[in-house]
Image (tube, rainbow, N blue to C red):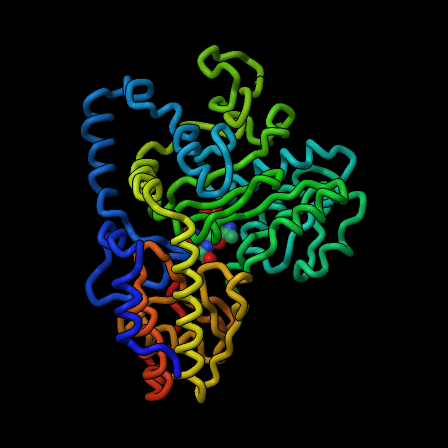
Length: 410
Ligand SMILES: Cc1ncc(COP(=O)(O)O)c(C=O)c1O
Ligand SMILES: Nc1c(O)cccc1C(=O)C[C@H](N)C(=O)O
């Protein structure tokens, strides 16, 4: 017999992270299992934006670039984020988007491996990763993208013309988590550089990026920075002096206010910045990092493993007759903080579930995704979500014609 609701209530009462949930805005009557796409807002986010507008912008006007630290926001925020991915000070910058960060890091990696002309990507990568690499290879004459189908085929693809490999630590569709240490070692042993996309791992658990050459990731999912919040770039210190990211804007210049005619890269990680930081978007992210600074990442991972394991167990028991198939790895070590199930009618099933207050999302062709953000998801949420899913399937609510159209984008 799977766990009872009363046992879930008891787990919540004993949860060392239970008070953190109160620091987020969550609408009543909603079980929000989409923190792997857009995290919930910290309650302090709105005040942080107001403060930026009224006190910094309104109070100091252009002087705020220095007095409020706007100019250095990419570096100061990067230093705050660094511990969450196992990096140190001066190794992370925040700004732009993940797609732009891929341009920066892949181009830097290509420059560091002259003569090698191949970039490897996994076909399971989030599409933008693949698209950006494809565009770069086209724009920089003479480069080729080599797709692998699954990391198990990576070793065979690693010939001596491979400059770099771009993979996601956690697969956005399946929630499968790759063994970054062994893959990074394999890639580096072949003379190539390893770039990790951490979009689905940063904030889901303690990431260890220290062996990687470069990494990128977004801050709007588990890190709760808000829609369109700035992304991050990690560059290992051994590459910082030589790296030449393709996007050479004035904020990455050694002396931006010297207004020199030619580009000279800034020392260190600053050369991975390009242009004026989106100051307003940093405010909610820094409000979230105020929370993250107080959080024990070991407790985050322990809760994530427990939540996802309980959800899998409950769904498999309660929904056994209704054709759901676990897509995520059963071994928690091999999972991020997301559980995916396949169902041939996954789209209307998810719509019916959302109508009943349980928010997950759907990824073509047939995957129902449930993200468990450990800072604000409770064990009772996992329980109630599984029971509601069983009801939707048992009573066939999903057959309602309202759920058949495919107009929603997320
Ligand atoms: C793995 C991964 N990479 C990149 C992105 C998106 O990047 P961007 O913020 O540039 O749209 C996402 C999600 O949107 C993602 O899941
Ligand atoms: N970045 C997104 C957006 O701009 C619109 C809608 C959704 C997103 C997402 O983040 C989706 C997410 N990367 C995914 O794993 O599918």
